Length: 173
Image 1 (cartoon, rainbow, N blue to C red):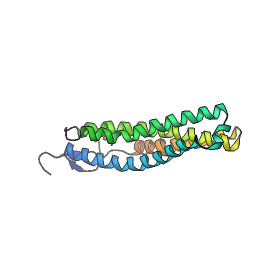
Image 2: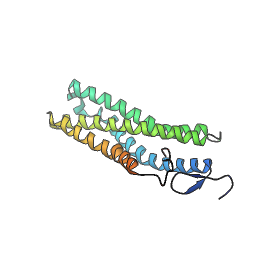
Image 3: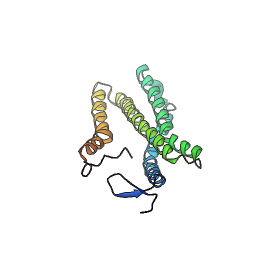
Image 4: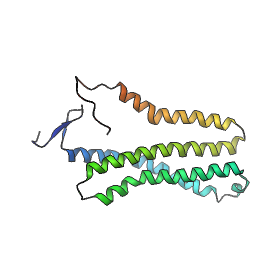
C-alpha cells in the first residue's frame, strides 16, 4: 500500500480518493449505457406515436396520458444523459469525486423518472388495447414488480449485509 492510499469500504480495497472516484465513475458509466439505450429507444417510439393515423382516434384521456408520458420520457432522457454533460463540463477541474456523487444522484432520479415513464407508457398501451379497467390492475401489478426489482431487492440486500466486526457500512457507491 502506498502512503497516500487509504482503506475504503469493507472489501479490503486500498484506493486513494481519486482512484475510488475513477472506479465509481467507470461503474456508473456502464450502468448508464444500459439505461440510456432503453430510454432512447422508448422515447423514439413515443415520439413516433403522434404521427400514426390511429392517434386521432384516441380519447381525450388517452391523449393526456400520452402527453404526460412524452414529458416523463423527456425528463428521463435528460436525467440519464445529464451525468455525461456534467462530467464533460467539469473534466480537468479536479472535481471527479463530487462529479461522481452528483452524477449518481442524477442517475437515481433518472431511474425514478424511468419508473414513472414505464408505468405511464403501459397505461396508455393497455388502455388502448383493452378498453377496460383491467389495464389499471395490470399496470399496478407491473409497477409493484418494477419497484421490487429496481428498489426493494437492492435495499433488502443492503439491509441484510452486515459490515465485518464493528466497521461502519460504506456510503452508496
